[in-house]
Length: 185
Image 1 (cartoon, rainbow, N blue to C red):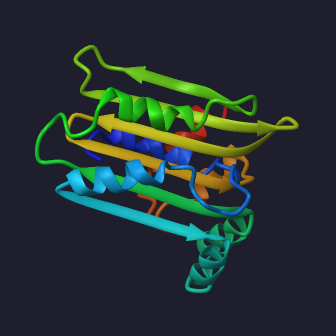
Image 2: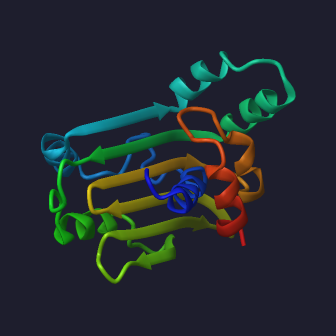
C-alpha cells in the first residue's frame, strides 16, 4: 500500500470485522479473487481462521505488548487480507468493485468511510458490522490505480484496542492505531 494515510485507515478497519460468515470463510467473491490473481503482477493472500490465529499467538513473546495482542486475538474469528499489485491501471473494473461492495450491503453492515478521488486513482470504503450495539466486524476496500487491497477482520473487538495489534499477523505498524482513532468514534 503506497498511500500511508490510506494504509492506516485500511488497517484500522481490519480489526473490527466480525464473523459475517459463521464458517470463518472470508466474504470475498471467490471467482473474482481468482480473476484478480490471474491479472495481478503480484498478489498476497493472508487467511488466518480462529485455529491459525490461536496457533500464531503461541509464537508471541511474553513482553507486555505481545501479551496484550495475544489476549485481543482470542476475540477474533479470522483475519483475511488480499493485496493485488498490477503492472498497469485498468486491471480491475468499476463492476468488480461494486461486486465486492455488494457483499457488505445488509441491515447489519454500515458504510463508515467512502472516499473517492476525482481522478479515480484512489477509492476507499470501510464497512462496520454492528449487532446489538456492538462492533462485530469490519471490512476495508482500498482501490488505487495499480493496487487493490481488501481486509476483513472477523471477531468482536473494541476500536480503542486496535493499536495493540500493530505489527502482528501481517498488520503494518501504525495502521491499527490510525483506525482506532478515526474509526472508533
